[in-house]
Length: 220
Image (tube, rainbow, N blue to C red):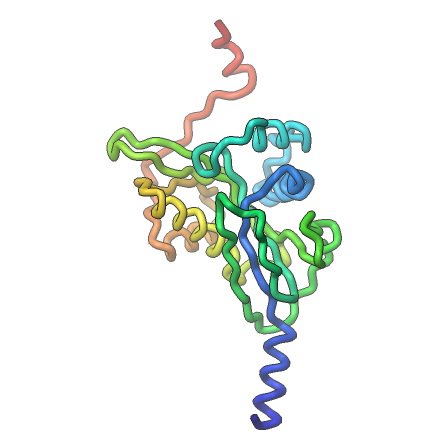
């Protein structure tokens, strides 16, 4: 190997990270809570954010636990500068692992704050929260993506696509009819991501939401 080729290989290796998507559990709640808070800040919706670590833990990870993708399901995206060790505690969802080659090294000032409970210098960079819905037209279950988010330092590196593909792949594998999500009309990058992945953006649909006092007015 020539010296220039070796230098290029070393540079690529130095700028590479390993990405893993795995099923979340109760140990991930602090990071999930922080990620949802950052999502609310990004969407300018912090006035709607009232979740706590306790409420997330109780609702997302009840006891007894429910089957993933047939109830509320969270997948977390982790990054490491070295290959991941085998995860022997993953019978319900096989982790998805990819090597990501970057043009240059990424500075992540939040890496320590988002340290993974799995240790080994792993940082949590994003997540996706989904749950099953149902289409009467298709007479099939589907998956609805409630939240999908990648931290600022790691955006535009294919990681959002990786999260979305993980949900879509699971839905297809389970014989479901579709994957649905909502996106803010000003979030052109997210809209383009969905369109690039083959999703249809349905402009004639509107979200109609009852919440807070308007919902409580219907208490029997």
